[in-house]
Structures are given as C-alpha cells and as structure tokens.
Length: 158
Image 1: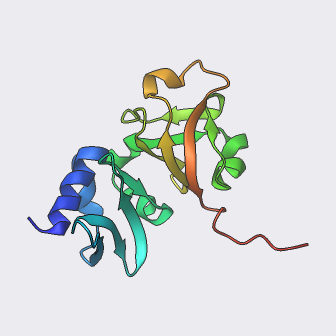
Image 2 (image 1 turned 30 degrees about the vertical axis):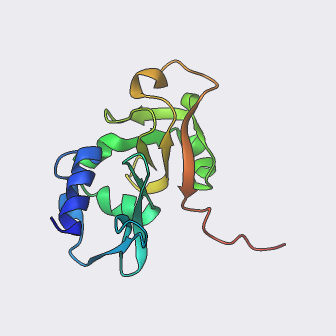
C-alpha cells in the first residue's frame, strides 16, 4: 500500500468516511529516518498534518481548511459564541461555556477544528472533553487550541 492510501484510510477512520476525497493529488510526505514511517504530509511544501504517536493526526490551519469542504468533516468541528471568536483565533483555549455548537465526532483527545458560523477555520486543537461532557460545564476547557489563525501573524510593535 502506498503512502497516499495509508493517509487516506487513516483520515477516513479519524474524521469520517469519505473525508479523504478532498485531499489533492500533489501531496508529499516526510518520513522518519529511523523507522521509515510517515511523519507528516504537505502540499507545495505547506504542512497539512502530522501523525501523532497515539495514531491521531494533528492538523494545521491549512489542513483544516482543505477538509472543511467535506460535509462529514464538520462533525469534528466546534462553533464558539461570537464573543469568544477573537480569543480562539489568537490561539487561546476554548471553554465549555463559550461553545455554541459541536459536532457528533468529538471525543476526549480527538482533533477538533474551531470554525465560525460561516464555516471559516479559526483554530485547530485537541478536545479535552467528549461531546456528552460539553453541555452544562462552566469553568472547564473544551478545546486546548494548538494554533489559531492570528497566532501566526507577527503583531506590530508600538
């Protein structure tokens, strides 16, 4: 089995059947020198995702932007309330009380994409709670954000 098929199967298993159909054909892979296994994958030298040691895939903002075009993938997403959008896009964690909607594929430790109501990607991270635990919690973290869309931009010095 070639690397493209392996990644496609893993993406479908993690994010939903058919999600891998939106992956462009010009994908490249980075392999471990020690084991020969796939470490990460990219398009035009822009990182899409990295394989985690637990079998998951840590997506980048670009990777989430590619997969968001698939309807099934939206079950891995969370929409925060409007007031929380600037904080999450800066890379700060999302708390349960700020969650407006969440998909059915959210589990503890799963990869989560934070989107707004227009389905624009704001951040990517890892779920701290499962979907059944998200409702009713006030002070708990729902998503530990790894990267926000504004966290990569250099802030001007005043």
